[in-house]
Length: 219
Image (cartoon, rainbow, N blue to C red; front, side, top):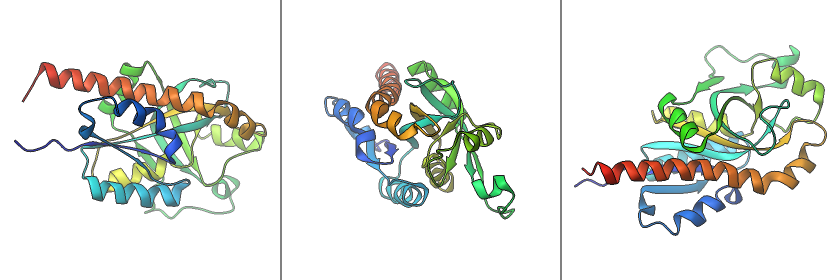
């Protein structure tokens, strides 16, 4: 019997996978999941995710991380499952630059995977902006929110594009650690661990449901 391809779970850096890795270490079927930090920021995350995909040949890719909220919702401590992920360039917002037409600047996550994660973890759905740098001015956060995004993360779009290039289902699960603005870094430091644990708990619940379905319906 052919071995089932694994689910690849990617984060920016190892601490954002740590709660999930610890839980998987207690499970007998860990071979069905590969956890891999890809890199911080869009460039390293794209390269790291592409390399992990080539190495593991997964059946799906899930990005787990922390994020900032542009407004009061999603609230700090909540978990957002990404729906639409856009590449947000502040120079384009200002009118000082433009993206060439053939350049992708938007990805929709896999609808089935998104629904399953949301249901398993009772998370909410959000549209995500991936920026090159962390936004610290409230005025800029307001402009980014006006594009339709409610959440900011530095890597989600990059990992999504790596998955799209490999024609793989993709989802992103983000724990909200801060509100985007001048206090973001202080809030992230205070809340990142809790946000990480919450995001990993959603993925853990989904993996548990998927394992239960396989046990009830063996091949």
